[in-house]
Length: 369
Image (cartoon, rainbow, N blue to C red; front, side):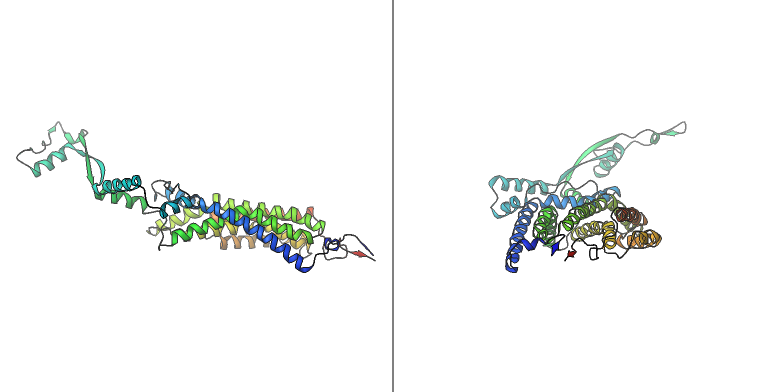
């Protein structure tokens, strides 16, 4: 009996327990790498949160709901912040806190501009004996003094209410939290998701090291080609959504709030969930050509079937784009047109790789007796 392709397990004497030991080894390696990356992303989680917040901040600025992009995110790492919270403040830090509190109690200084006539009128009303009233208007040849630019003076005012007013205006349209632990839990969520993304190559590598032993060479070739293509398509879809689709979605939703006369209050945890969910949907939908190739290789659909049913496919893509993008028609088109292009790309891949059913008689694993 001769084999066209021998199973790699035939050359090994590993028992089922040995394979479980291999699985445990690669799982421990993968989890150790994930733990290390999550520690790093946790240390710089404040910057990760700022990146996730950037689309909504820019949209608020475009609609005049935010004066400027929030750039006062803490520059300290998580561990430096924890150490600062754990240790008692130094004398310099206590003195700085006292000065800040003293300045806040004294109020913030604000400069205002007032016309001299209004100033004289106010002083005359308060102390008429010391300050004469403002000069009367003169009418000469049909013109008045009102046609000439009025003189003005600048006054410096200070009051605690000015500081409160500035803080209210500054914070009114920032993302809010509705309970004490929400900011911390959102911080941890963003850090862990970032850790999963950055450590994904290491996780896939360890999973591949365990699985590749049981695959034939032609199967490993498929994993190399289509696995890499799948990762690239997912990243392209997610980045495309984050940087191109989000502006259209947020502009439409914020404009809808303005149309209804509603003041939006963005909740941080809900925005983070939305900012993770929609790019993930785009990344998954961009796997369309690989799904088409997979079904073609199994003999479910042929290249001709894909071509003949192109109109139905466009209709289905349009319906899915409408359901997956909760916004205006422009965002739906931003998903629909790339998917139509990817559908044509899937047809081209099927043409370049003709149908070869791995379970048919011509499979490479056939055995000659």
